[in-house]
Image (cartoon, rainbow, N blue to C red):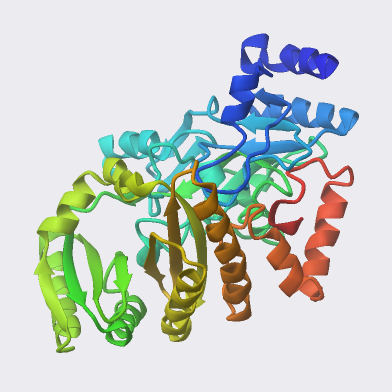
Length: 447
């Protein structure tokens, strides 16, 4: 490893390579509950060219590379396996390359934080469509690689749907541009054309097929007004029907369902944006749609508006109970109620003491979230949660669920349920073709 460390230092400078024990420990885990595994070396490149040199060196030494952004995900997609390797952190790649106001796009490096990117755009009167709840630490490169969802699910869908093109370093060390930028004479203005959708190959691959170095996203004029209000009910069936109608009629930008306790309390917040007249008209229509259900009550704007104004700081409030084992996946609307009761039954049966269920609808279904809180030092509760999580992931896939962020957490369950499909064989063949030395985040999402 000393020879490898010296040669890595020659690429990025000694100050950006580290193998000190306490530093490696900090990169051994993400924000989730998977068992920690330390890398052998952490490296912080500045450019796509430096990443390419690092990848070439990893091929020579047959050492895995694990790409990492802010480390705020929960499924161990940015942490090593027990085999260690090189953790490649992108946070030095933190510049905005271009804000193209003529064509409505922004190109940025993969490691810029969302808060930095959004602040720069807002100063010019622009915004992006999707931002994660962990925007203080989260980065576009990592969010696209998941691909993540967040504020704006219904109108803007996911981070992957906002991408027009990528600059990616392949496992071979080649640097490729996707979208219209694949043509060296062209700018990035459209995702398709010139051939198959190469951008989509890297969206959701979690670094298994290459490392995202740069991305071009759609941007939108900052709305005149952003308005939120809250409703409550005890009727899960009625609530899901409302989510479905709001989504299919695209009446809202976003619906957040932070509390789901069937028969007790279900809270949901709606988010609307536009000019004053548009917001007023939409809110009037939304209220009529929601309140025709006698079991749903209007609460008001104060709670969600306060949360929205401080959302980047208040998101962590729910984690005051400890870290959370997370089981997150998408389901169509007609399976959400069944999934809610199924996950609750599993958590109760395993004796999980402190958990929450949530939903975040998108146009044709919803993200279904189960969070199981515990203190890291409580090994007994952690063991119960791990057992429950395994059964829940298995059940989610049996029900037709689709985890958007897979990491190492979902890998064995994806292999179990998809392993005999043509899709799985195709993914493995792509992996083998692009990464014959199996150095690029090996094992993530079962690849």
